[in-house]
Amino acid sequence: EQQEKWVPRAVNMEIIGTYAQTELGHGTFLRGLETTATYDPNTEEFVLNSPTLTAYKWWPGGLAHTANHCVVVAQLHSKGVNHGVHPFIVQIRDEDTHMPLPGVKVGEIGPKLSFSTANNGFLGFDNFRVPRDSMLMKNAQVLKDGTYVKSRLSKLTYGTMVFIRVMIVTDMAYYLSVGATIAIRYSAVRHQSKPKENEPEPQILDYVTQQHKLFIALASSHAFRVTGQWLWTTFVRVNKALTSGNADTLPELHAVACCLKAVTTRDAASMVEACRMSCGGHGYMTSSYLPILYGITTAACTYEGENTVLLLQTARSLVKAWQKGSKGKPLSPTEAYLMDKSPVPKWENTLDGIIAGFRRVSAGKVQDCVSKIDKLVKMGTSYEDAWNQTSVRLVAASEAHSRAVILATFRAEVSRAAAALSPPLARVLHQLVHLYTVYWALERVGDLLLYTSIAERDVQELQQQYEDLLQKIRPNTVGLVDAFDLRDEILNSTLGAYDGRVYERLMEEALKSPLNAEPVNQSFHKYLKPFMQGKL
Ligand SMILES: CCCCCCCCCCCCCC(=O)SCCNC(=O)CCNC(=O)[C@H](O)C(C)(C)COP(=O)(O)OP(=O)(O)OC[C@H]1O[C@@H](n2cnc3c(N)ncnc32)[C@H](O)[C@@H]1OP(=O)(O)O
Ligand SMILES: Cc1cc2nc3c(=O)[nH]c(=O)nc-3n(C[C@H](O)[C@H](O)[C@H](O)COP(=O)(O)OP(=O)(O)OC[C@H]3O[C@@H](n4cnc5c(N)ncnc54)[C@H](O)[C@@H]3O)c2cc1C
Image (cartoon, rainbow, N blue to C red; front, side, top):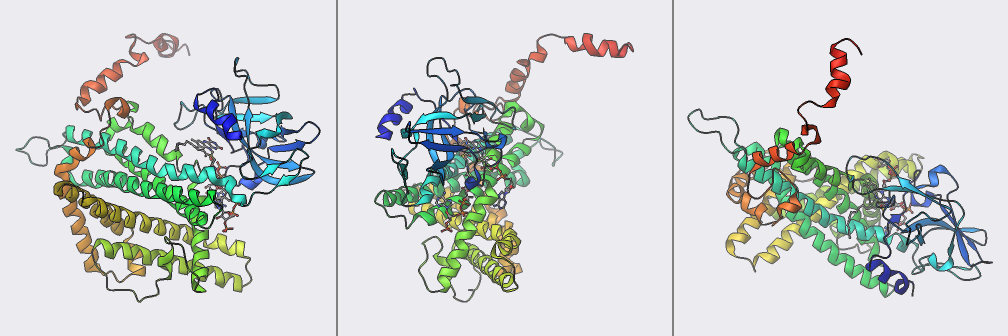
């Protein structure tokens, strides 16, 4: 009945909430969170407290001035025992006056790289009492007398984070579609330089280096949208199993959500930055929206699980899978390829050949990690230290695994959908799959040379395939970004507007600057003039 109590009020916006988990002192290590929730059986209440400065919640979006409730993650104490972190729904502001309630200290954390509208806040409790039913009791419970009833699976507390990580993959597809639309439309409008003296300045979109910078962002948007849909379907299936008490598929979902969130956010941030730089000086204008878009995508590399930490979570799963598989036990579908012990096949410069190559790279890296860890442990190093000393390789193995998942999913889903598409559209989408796959083969050619039978002539041929694909995709580029159908109001960009009136829009925006309100700014009279007269 807790959902009946809280959900309708949240849906109709009586409750405006946020997720208050991260503290000044801990964001990654959840078992180290310091906020306490101590059960008082005499009053059937929890007493929330921030015992130290580092216990203050810090970062939750909307916490500073918007939220009047929040989900607080705190160490649950009852009958003198600490049962670990649990979620509590807590009202922090009066619903009429919006004043912080007594015992609640809340405020804004200050300027950030971007997300300037998110009023991320801090929150401290001074022995703040909440009723027993504030504890979200879907998984674990505390009875009236303070008896703690354990969840059947402690990690279910972490379920919110899996959900958001799943959603973030699709978010990155969207942000890349915005960045690609702005940069490609601008590149179609911008003319620059004179490679041929007797011809007009060409569109910068005709420079192959510009195509190299931008087409991968376009292709990645589709790759991440398709992968995000696959991941969501997987999430729904796992959650259905969880509701019937079967948690067998949760570890695989956690592992694949971690590495896909990490890889898609890092790619999105770096590709949006490439979109910005491909627009020259005008890409550095806030009015282009690209700097803001970079701020949004790079934040995703940190929030909802810092990328390195998440890649190491996946690596933990890959190492365990390797050890399980080596004992002949069955592996999860996404990790089953790790046990492919067949001899390394002759390299093929085909999509299937490249996907198989990435699986070989991932399996080879995982095997190398397991060998290094085993060797260190045999020499007397603790497992934890051996893990840490191998962690750079573990992250690389995780990335290779993630790339293999994306490549295979993108190819499979487009091939499946192609049958229902017009031949011209199917052809263009296949070109994007091909470009994405060959791009990453070239980006990771060192790994392929180490773990597959790819030869120098294959690499030369892949480079030529890549350059041919840039040429094939060029005529459809503007059509492909128009197909994202992003309205000008959403793009919010002087460079990406549908009508292509870039220069007029740049000047219109510039004239809105408060510094253009008067021909001589008062700073001249206050600082420059006295300085020039030697009076400062
Ligand atoms: C509407 C949608 C909107 C989309 C987004 C919009 C923008 C959003 C705007 C901004 C929003 C930003 C909002 C925010 O930023 S909210 C704050 C986000 N914060 C985090 O993500 C914290 C990250 N840290 C952790 O998750 C944990 O501390 C980790 C995992 C690192 C270690 O933790 P711990 O030390 O306790 O665990 P362990 O490593 O010993 O592993 C122990 C076992 O547990 C398993 N395990 C671990 N985790 C999970 C899991 N989750 N599901 C299932 N299983 C899990 C694990 O596989 C292992 O299994 P085994 O190997 O023992 O079998
Ligand atoms: C824009 C934004 C919005 C946010 N919104 C929210 C929100 O709404 N609610 C909320 O609760 N939180 C929110 N956060 C906080 C976010 O979840 C944390 O910042 C994130 O979990 C990382 O934790 P941290 O900041 O403590 O970094 P740390 O974990 O301290 O990371 C610092 C460095 O230490 C490394 N490191 C840490 N642990 C390990 C390890 N075990 N192995 C190897 N390296 C390690 C990391 O890789 C990283 O390089 C937000 C953050 C941002 C930037």
